[in-house]
Figure 1 (tube, rainbow, N blue to C red):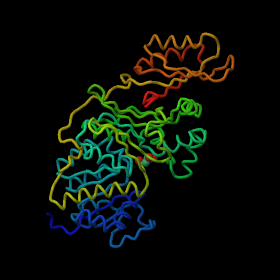
Figure 2: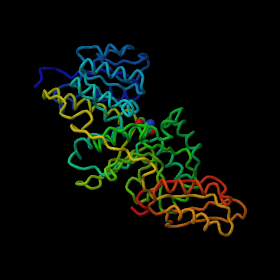
Figure 3: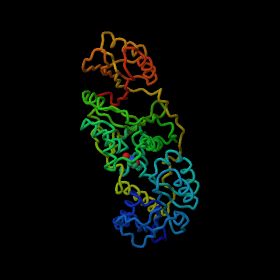
Figure 4: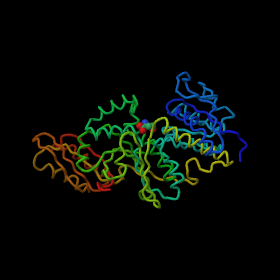
Length: 438
Ligand code: HSE
């Protein structure tokens, strides 16, 4: 047992999540101490802006503009990095680790790209890095993968891990509005950033998926190996067709084991309305995890915001605090598996899926057979066809749903179809999961 009187914490970054973390540490101090055995002392907070009132009574906590006052303070046990981005967050974290301090971070972008270097530094220095808050905010999904589901071979994870995209797709589905219109509203309400690229182009989800994949399968995953496609090209017409098919379009982060290789991909996905995560709407996140022993599990909650994300940050501080109280070091390996393996991430060309294909077909005799001929020649079998409206000489939407097909074959077929005279524009492709009938 430790002779320490408190677990001493410094927070770098007093923005939304930093303020939520400080509020929880202060307002829930009693329950935190009862659960952990020692109080948490929030000794110092650093931020470039120490003047703005965050509405939190900080008591004896020192505010500083210099993060080094935290990183180099011999009294501080846990450095909490909440500034985000690559620089200077990476330098701060590595310096804290070199000073033998435990680190807690919500920085998914940093971990997805530089995680291996940070995990190795932590292992070498005998400290831990907690990153529960980096994926799905307040949902304890990383702890569940590391601990609650540790007995399982994870088979697949389907995640809605970006609240901004889910908010936009939900409004498009429920209100029939266009992407750009809903994005503007989301920005006005503060749900989307002024520069929304990371969210809407799927990059934020891919950062999170690389962390999830690593924890699910015990393999390092390079962020650039995660296939990433966002929602900015989704149109109301595809949402309408999805409804006709009894489906919804969601931005899914998908990871699966497939014959010893890992699939890791983020893209808009058509899923049956009966699929459990199809009902997850608005800014909420959810993860559907299948393990070989446990079967299907579902995790749901808020993926962003000061208090939900702060909840995950404080839980990590408490895990570290519990280890310090009981005098144990690195009970949990930083990357979860004590013995890791290097699995191959399957190339997108090699995945199989069923597909929603919307052709811009010129409405005249023989077009359907020409298109299906090219699909057939490329081993793509059609499950059903829908055509709505009739406008001779103009392109009309012709929708086909395929059976399971190889992505390489689909790309090859579309490269041919999209140059045919009877087709008036590029074909829209949306992958389907649950085979239209989960
Ligand atoms: N920008 C993220 C989202 C939240 O929209 O869900 C932080 O990861």
